[in-house]
Image (cartoon, rainbow, N blue to C red; front, side, top):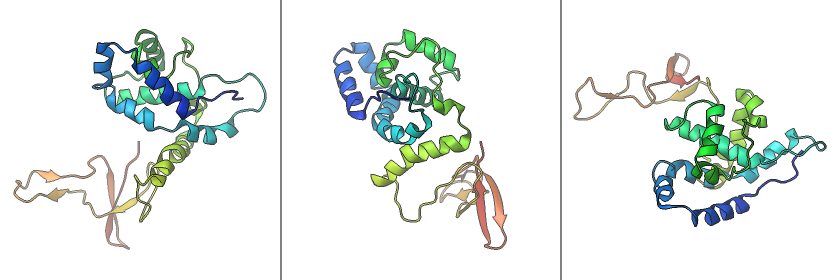
Length: 204
């Protein structure tokens, strides 16, 4: 069960209070290597996450502690990994949190146990994670106007999407023929003979 969930308002207040105590080197790191992940954490609404996750928790039993903090730490971990700034190991990540004051302050994950805590997300399949991020990231982005609703298509890995792009890329004016622009070089391509259109799909 969940007894207490740190609200986004409380999290932002915590960040503002913590920044006052940053030393000069921490301020530099915050505005360089950690700037993009930190801004994404500030925008990631864990209140929306609670709405989605609450039904997965029991109404009785020992309360789960620090769930939004663990979630933010989990997301910070993958954001840094995607930038090549962290290794793909939760054990190493938790050990790093113990020795880097700025990382737990960024996610408000100050009281996470020394061993990796198992959040419900870690046991989900890919489709479960897709539903979660659709609820907490895609829908709020649509509501705020960051993603236009007109002609919107939401798909998961492996979905075939018709596209005006071409697997051979596009020639750019003034560029040599061998330097072509490929909008999605990692996608797999096919040809829909009925619609006479290319389609692409990306599977991880």
